[in-house]
Length: 546
Image (cartoon, rainbow, N blue to C red):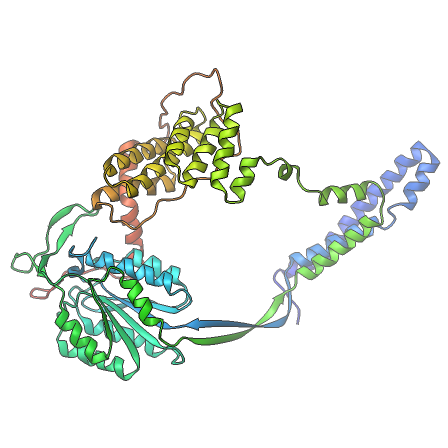
């Protein structure tokens, strides 16, 4: 059965074809009249050539209208094949995981290792749950690792609506997610925790025995140290506020509970990944490498396959046949359409090197161009950007600094953006001069935001600078990459006056922009929490909230 996405367009197709045919026929009659006014011989040639052109053009227009209506018929059997494990990540997000005996914190390290696992186990079916006083499913088993990464980026103890630490719900939630999965592949629960459980140990042991009975592998990833440490309370920018306190006002001290982790692992016949291992994600990956991965085949039937290509192909054949049977102008137009564009023939050696990924060669070629166009700001920007991509900070800094003095606001912004990125990358490598590099990055991004106050990438990179300053460089976020070289001409030529300092006209003031930057991360986190529909409530008196 044939169906159409837009039936009204099918009904209009004959009218469209007739209108185009009438217009083409009128144009042919006008051409014949003009030829007859010249001479009878030219009129005779005009009458014999293009006799069926109007019919061909009208038919092609009608077929194009049919294609536009979205015809569908037939069915197709689609088979998808996946091969992998069924693995659930369960992460402890209680306040005790904020202790900083691991860098940047127990929770921060757990999230970092979890992100690496999501990347390393690409192709496996992964799920995600979190637990504190109770447990929550954030993502069912899926092969979409990017979705899990988004959830991991937004996790902190405020996501949970009930404080405390309870291992039993976390184990039970993992059983619920994995028990429904096919048994043709091994099922694994990877649980990140410091082991400080406030529920009764017997409940946790019961769930661990259930895991063992169902054949689910348990891997406990320990976090923290065995020495008592306090739990810091920090503000939105990472500044220290106070220590976490109990109901009596005394500071809380937390430790990694190896005794709890040990008995739970024994009950589930599972494995513990030690907190002292520098590469916990690698250890988990090596453990699951020996587990059985199964091939799962899923087939489905798609009814009403899109067939718009068929009338389009017929329309193209009609026009091509008409064109090939004509002389002179039609064949010349066809030759021009098949000829390569002129812009592709005029690319410079530097642009060709950049397209091929040879950034070092591109930088050298741009420097060679500068010998003939020393006052070309765009050439300085292109050379600096290529040097930045090639890992030559000295050449990049010198070239981009020249481009940053351009009178062209767009070019000046791009040069300042890349100067900030250069300083930000240098701060990650040169720890001795880290603060100086971060100051240079902040200055470059603030100047860039004066030119484009609403540029989201520049805002994010400036926010990243502030985070690196407040957290001591422990952030795993990466700065946004530099814009590619600009193909246009520079704005600063010879004989022009020196550039004046830019003014933020009609944009945000510096204080307003700074307030916006501080709120970016918190607003995104708040949005993701709202999607989960949970708000953390205050713990009842006498109930542990860490």
